[in-house]
Every structure is written in structure tokens, then in C-alpha cells.
Length: 104
Image 1 (cartoon, rainbow, N blue to C red):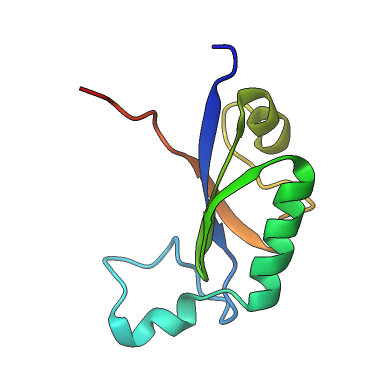
Image 2 (spheres, helix red, strand yellow; image 1 turned 180 degrees about the vertical axis):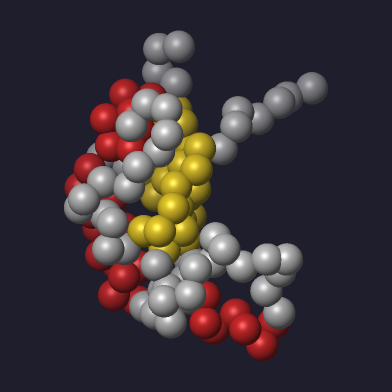
């Protein structure tokens, strides 16, 4: 679809090295700090994402949601299985595409 905007959820790499993606079943409130990225990681990831052409929808200490055209997302992360590009791999642990919303 022409002009389609894709939302991508990103998980930042943590200061502690612990993976937010592998924690199950849930994170307790006293563990939250262990799953935060450094301010530098957050800042550099956002800067690189903008340089690549993404719009930052929201960003916090654990990750970000970005938007971009289908072409930009595919060019950056791939078509089928999302891969973190070399320029972002030291800042971002994982990427997932949000499914389109349903309006009633």
C-alpha cells in the first residue's frame, strides 16, 4: 500500500547486560533498574534511527517505538525476519513490527 507507515518496537541493550526479552514471567518492581539502558545508549540509538530516516514515536529507558515507510523498514531491518543493522546492534537488542490497528 502506497504511503503505508510501519511501527517498529525496539528494545535497548541494558547497562547490566540482562536481556529484557528473555525475562519471564515478569519483572518485579525491585528489578526494573537492571533492565534500563544507559542515557548514552538511548541518545545514540535515537540519533542513529533519525539519521536512517525513522520518526521517533516514543522513547524511554527500555526501548523505543519508531515509524517509517515500509521501504525504509525493509531496507533497514529486512523483509521477513527482522535483523538489527550493524549501525544499531550495539544499542538495540530486538525489533518487532506492531500489527496494524483495527478500527470499528
